[in-house]
Length: 157
Image (cartoon, rainbow, N blue to C red):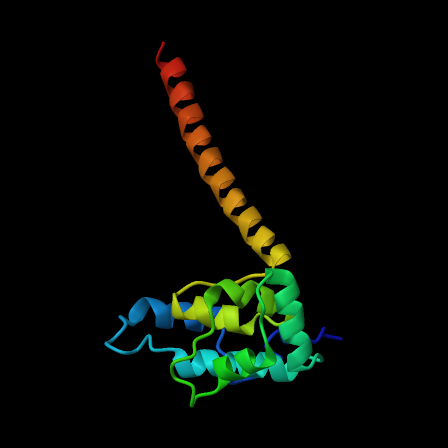
């Protein structure tokens, strides 16, 4: 009886793969105005707040506690409202926001805009290990070439 293969692509079919994102980023040069991410960032912050089990009051209080700055619910509301064009979410509060909401989507959105990937600790360490393994492979290759040259030179004597 043949074994059935498990599908690895059980994710949302509309979701881009890391390869799709990389190819888009490499092929597209930013056009004038294409990095105006105000609306997308506000939507990302709003979505993180909606997904968070805490109220906006609680998120603001937790952010205040984490940063030492007085952050209010009305500040969160202003930072997410499209009508408040003069109010911007300060980048210095983003780590506290992510910690308070338990959501990193706003940070991930900013990273993608800058052609970067945001990874959680274990994934970042896995990527770092992979980079180390690639360096080890290159070093082994150089060692093997040098060993071959030594063998060749010793054979000449």
